[in-house]
Image (cartoon, rainbow, N blue to C red; front, side, top):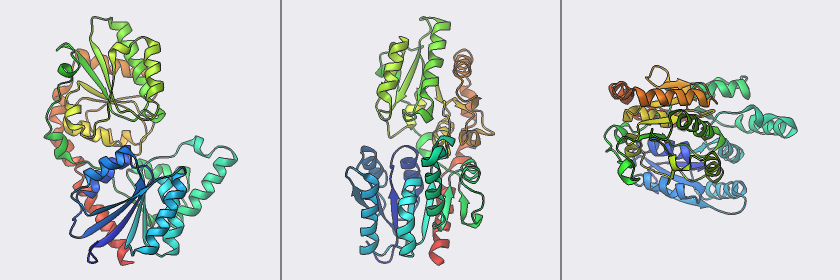
Length: 378
């Protein structure tokens, strides 16, 4: 690595989903002649996708493998900061921050933690939850800067963890996306690919198959629609991904007898053409830190149905997004039926320019660079 560059060490326990997307969007706006990065992360398929996304940057990948990823991550981190001089460490996700806090403090390396999720009440139940809370409070107190990806996420931290921290170490930089990737993308023809009739109505789901993403409520909504409208209405759910509980979700779809109307399709790193090939995207999440996918859909001009959960409600405020109550399959079914009968495509198309201005990641990258400079001067 060039000694003249600012050397940033990135610690990423979970380089998947929203964290991978965040890294892709934000760091691609950094100048490779000024910054060099070392990425410590597990060897996952999505890690290679991330490295390809960052191929124009000066990035060294330091792989972590083994039965206990957390311990391996800690050991690799110690080795790196002992062997090399880093100007700053940026940990992504709570687990990464906990692993990094003590080594960064001992070695006096400025440490910024980005929290990519919000907390649930179940996390802190019982004695184990009490211990978890103590660990979080102890380690986070050593972090120089805590970066939240939405105002909702910041408020959630203060309500669930503590509001007694020095809030000068808090900074909220609301997420953004590469708007050109979605506004200028082509349209993928799923009807041709899947041999569906031209009048088929395509409902999309692009979240991970985890309870948090609420996929089961969307499946129940589709079942209600098919029961009400009958087989003559060709409504199909296209679900993209292959991780998490996809096997269990597939079994649930089969148990309802609607398998012929649900397609489980592979993970797609380039979502622009995917989104534009849908009639509507549904995000039935139970919680989010900040809904990047909602931003992507709005910039692509695709009708969007979302839940009113934390994180999503902030993104969809003052947009044409169709918002329904969380965990409410009937409301989701009603919103989809309304789109079938009276599409709102024109409304979302008219909003594209506003979405581009609002969600352009250039602003977020610039703000993060300023935080880096502030920490490096201390």
